[in-house]
Image (cartoon, rainbow, N blue to C red):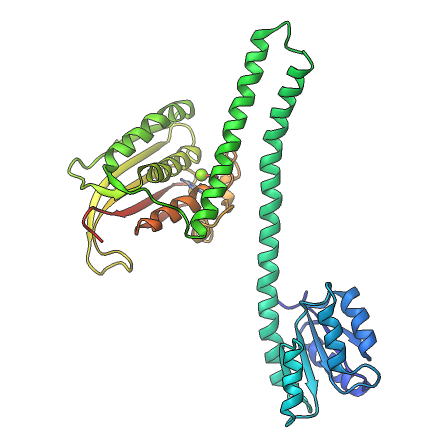
Amino acid sequence: MDEHLRILAVDDAPDNLVLLDRLLKRQGFDVVNASSGKECLAKSASEHPDLVILDVAMPEMNGFETLKHLRGNEITKDIPVIILTANSKDAKSIEEGFSLGADEYLTKPIDQDELIARVRSILRVVKAEHEIEQLKSDFQSMLVHDLRSPLSVIIGVLELGAAGEFDQNPAEMKEFLNSALETSQKMLGLINDILDVAKLEAGRLQLNKQPNDLNSLVADAAARLKVLAREKGVTLKIERDESLPICECDGGKIDQVVTNLVGNALKFTPKNGEVKIRTYKNSFADDIPGLKGLYVALEVSDTGVGISDDELPLIFDRYRQAKSAKGSTQKGTGLGLTIVKRVTEAHGGKVFVESVLGKGTKFTVFIPARGND
Ligand SMILES: Nc1ncnc2c1ncn2[C@@H]1O[C@H](COP(=O)(O)OP(=O)(O)OP(=O)(O)O)[C@@H](O)[C@H]1O
Ligand SMILES: [Mg+2]
């Protein structure tokens, strides 16, 4: 697991350096050596180490001075540093090391197990940070792509119009304008989704709670999605509990939940399949953590492609799409389920999913019924 992590070992005593080098390499790390403060600064900038192990007692530039320079340079300021010193009892120099930004402090002679334990614990954090950076950059490039391609369609249409291309052909102009309009609406939808997710994540989404009937929210959403179901050749069934209690919820947001779940079910179910929406009520005792009392339930099940067991826990993460989705003709962004989960939780509810690859998927959302708070 550590093969790509690089450590820069700095010590003016060749014997120590050899020892460190051997010890770290044996653990599978990539090791770079430096025998002076100056060399350390140069290699920290050029070799991009994930960690520096720095001896304090060195001629010319000692470890503290070297650390000061490392912290002062934009490129090297965030690299974790473990300071090595022979002054085990010198509290003042330990304090100086920390105040200059050392992450750990070890005394010589080196206790090998302790050194390795410290190195590993620092590198665990470094690794987690790398992963977050990677996710962020994937996320940004996807965003740029998803926003740029529709915008270029719109610009293209406007350029043609401005150049007079449609002057003689109003029918063609209408057709192009309509496609630009549709593209703009999709783009606005995407931007709204992104903003929603950002707000939900910051806990800043304002819920406009009103007494609502889940059955009628379901009926409205189903009426809108009927066309899509027909186009896809998928049967859309509704099974409503007519004695469903009212719930205090934000109708617009719960509509997003229904629309996303049913939209997904239709998207990931091939021709001749079936999508079923069911509502019911359920009372929880203490059987499921986080649920207690009376809830209204929305169940959306399909006979579609399904989701594998190892991907199932991940599909609520933003921008996450399962492998089984790759064949789908309609491209998505991977935000729908993030919104479903966050909106449900903002209402004090919970969402569950069960799936069998190649057979189908069932999502169940529980929202507290009125009076359950
Ligand atoms: N009913 C379903 N059947 C099979 N896979 C599903 C189903 N619902 C969701 N998934 C999987 O979960 C992934 C995430 O769903 P989500 O709704 O968040 O994103 P999306 O539909 O791909 O894009 P978006 O909703 O942003 O347009 C999907 O890409 C798909 O892999
Ligand atoms: Mg979706």
